[in-house]
View (tube, rainbow, N blue to C red):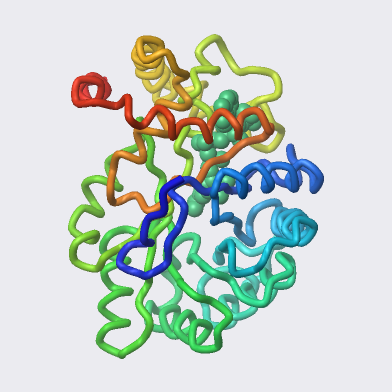
Length: 322
Ligand code: NDP
């Protein structure tokens, strides 16, 4: 495992990290989470991603219990949370968004659920057009000053919104964001590569990228339909199934997936490993957040590091064409 700086910050994050969206509390219980964390830590992973909105806070509870059971020193790993969607089924107006009130309370609640006394990374899970940017930046700055948050950032904000946050922080001597959490994979590249392009150089923006396998599409396992115990078959995720498979867009993406398969075969590897390794080629990626519902998936995905040296110029060019 290699370690990359989180943008221009001094924090060294492992190039692969591990997240809990969909999986923890739904497909992964505390015992399995503990095993998965053990596997991650043995492989050198030092960052675990979570959010108040995942399983309405239950995902953080599972993660907190598993990390506690492992009893690794707190200074040996990083945990994150994200604020915006709220942790309740139907959050009240004060229980969601990016107001000073909700940001402050969400931080305290996440620390409690995760059983930690500070969050290494804290993200604004989406932009909040109903809260002035200055209020959000001040709230994050205060949490950093209090030692409750070490690095704050955004997730799926537009380049313009991220720029506003930096400029407000700089002109008021406040702590600027350090990172953004965007989607990035072989099928979803535009925002990361084009829209954010100028931000990497200008602000030293770090990135913790999500869905490196496009929710599993880039494993190739959806090519013959939706497998029984896959993410797209889960109750409550019908919207995902629609966008992954049952739509024109989904079908167009599946065509690309089937065109990618032979490249993986030529390299004698799996498409999953190839797709994850490809994300690491981009130096603006600080860490690729893996997702897995089974231990074997996690083990396979960790082995993507072995595929990285195989991605030579000619292979990259073939991938680029597709
Ligand atoms: P992926 O795109 O890698 O999808 C992971 C899912 O794909 C697994 O849960 C599993 O689902 C399937 N899968 C993974 N590996 C394999 C394999 N080797 N073989 C077969 N199936 C496999 O990542 P995620 O979408 O889970 O995103 C990773 C993390 O990023 C999240 O946990 C979260 O922390 C973060 N995230 C952040 C978002 C944001 O808005 N900031 C949004 C989404 C994610 P199954 O077995 O059920 O089919």
